[in-house]
Length: 313
Image 1 (tube, helix red, strand yellow):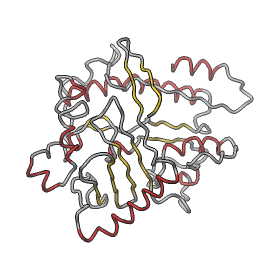
Image 2 (tube, one colour; image 1 turned 30 degrees about the vertical axis):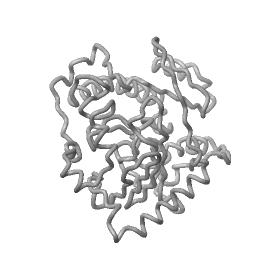
Image 3 (tube, helix red, strand yellow; image 1 turned 45 degrees about the vertical axis):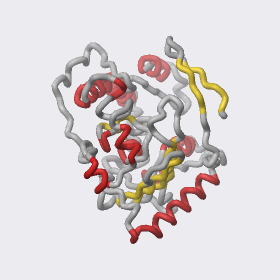
């Protein structure tokens, strides 16, 4: 895919601006490194996150995590039974990072091409994943939940001609902002149906009138029944998580004082007004975006690996 991209860049109309979209699926479970990278990280171990092992009854009473999180530790997306395989977290992370090396080489090839063609200063490069990923936080792996490691998506943006690099942007940007940003660079007006905004203003240091909170939604999937439908709203300081379709605890975290989301403070009397306010904002957003219509989509996986998506019920 990288080779095709570079060939297209070489043969493009040199008198026109260009847009190239290169998307790899290499770093997707099950992770399988290229032969040239297999074994380069063998024996490496990762540092366990603070929330990795808090699964005893006494700990859960103190932390007040939902019971579904405790149960999922022993499922497809939990550290004790990862992807239904007899493996361990360190081995999976090693496979992941060795697989990632292929993508790393690919991105290097594209950046080298830009520099060789004197386009590295004026080309806007956006490098990102399509989702966040857990490596043992709350005893979970993979994605599909509203904790920080999953709700956050890795993203790097580079264009010296437009803004200085080397800094982290603390403003709440989202994947829905990618398309409006690209359109802004092309001097094309964003369609009304696009909910996001151009990130150029915050990349240039202007945070005026930028969003102060983000919303999150995940709908229960037929193939991954261990994770419930999840709704959440996140501000700079707090995150409120609400579940649908199960009898369990919702969650509230103070992200400033508890960035690891270890202590669920939703039952604290002093936070009840905040909980009501965030819940109201969350449901207003769901009403506005038709999120109240919870989809139930059944899928059938055939032996040869293809999926058939049936009508929604």
